[in-house]
Structure formats: C-alpha cells, structure tokens
Figure (cartoon, rainbow, N blue to C red):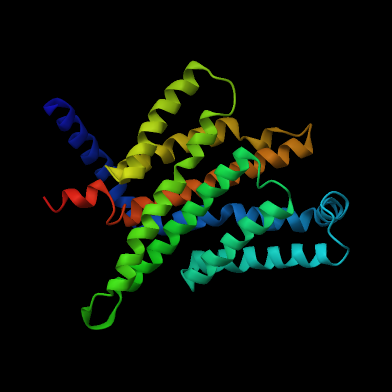
Length: 272
C-alpha cells in the first residue's frame, strides 16, 4: 500500500507540473468544448433546413409553421446561450436555455427513449451542471468586502455532486455499445475505475484528466466523421457523437478547474 501511495503521489506531481502552464486556459477551453455540440447542431439545422422541416412534418407530425418556429427557436437559443456560456455572461440563463434544448429536442425527434442517446445527453447535462457550479463559485469569490455567500456555496456542492454523477454516464453507453474486444475491456476497466473515482470525488481532478485523455483518443479513432463520405446520414450521426463527446470532455475539464466540491472524498480528507 505504501508503494501504491508513493506511485500515486509521484503521478500527481507529474500531472501537476504538466498542467500548471495550461491552467489559465483550461476554463475557456472547457466552456468552448462544452457548447461545441450545440454550435454544431445549430449550424447543421441551418445547412439542412429543408430536410429538418420535412422530417419534423412527415415523421413527427409537426404542423407547417410550428416546425419552422421550433427550429428557429432552437437555433437562436443554442447560438445565444453558447455565446453567453463562453463569455461567462448570465451563465444561469445559458445553462437553463441549453438544458431546455436537450429536453425539447429529445422529445421532438423521438430519441428520448433511445438508451445511448439518453445516457449521452445526461452526460452533457452533467457538463452543464459543472458550468453552473463554476458560475456559483465565481459569484461566491467575488462578493464585496470578502463576505462569504453561504447560499451559493451550498448550492454549488449539490450541483457539483449531480454534475459528477451525470458526467460519468457516458462510459455506461460506451461499455454496452460495440463489440466486446480485449481493448474495449481494458479501456472500460480503466475508464470505469476513473468514473467511479470521479463520482465519489476521490482524486477527482486526476481521474477527470485520465477520462479526457481516453475520450480524446476514442473520439479521433471511432468518431472520425471526416473519413465518411459514402453515407451522409451515417456521417451526420457519427459527427453528432463526435461533438457530444467533445462537450462531455469540456465538462470533465470544468471539473479539473473547479474541483469536486464539498460532497467528495477529496474534500472530506482535508478535514482530517
């Protein structure tokens, strides 16, 4: 156990040295990655406007006009709220708007009961909760005269706990999708352990870095939509998965930036 502890501490020191120069840029990169799926979705709706209208009207029963308004509201909401999130302006409204997009699109396109879709969107929602927690913590730190804002601090604990739990659900969909190979078993084991550590808040920052690394490789190897030109529909689905994975990576990077919060093993250890 002593050897394991020493290896763990040495690994943390190495990761700390590597990440130190990048720390000032992590919040901006994390927020940009988090909203990337919404930006891509808004661009796709605009570029495929007629196809989107036809699908909603012919297959989802949307009346003419209602489908137009639905798509327009979604595009405006995603673009506006993504800009607010990146710029750290009115973050609560940005998170609320993007969360509403997740829910409404799930029902409108009939994908809410798709297992993979459901877990992935819960993970994206977890990323949005991390963004909300970052905003609450920033408010607490900026209170005038150095007076602590207990309300925001208490809220951030619950939001961070919920965000951590939702973020790791992406790996559940990964484990149950695709063929069961040796490589998938190894990645699932490492990722599953890291997810458990994130969920309970034990070495959460370093576990999140491991998950971001795994997801980066996975996204480039599996969700390489730029190599698909023979099937536009399949290309769109893979592209959608690619940007959703980027968003979840953004959520994990926000966890690296703000920490696991009060309801975590890491925080409890500080009291002993």
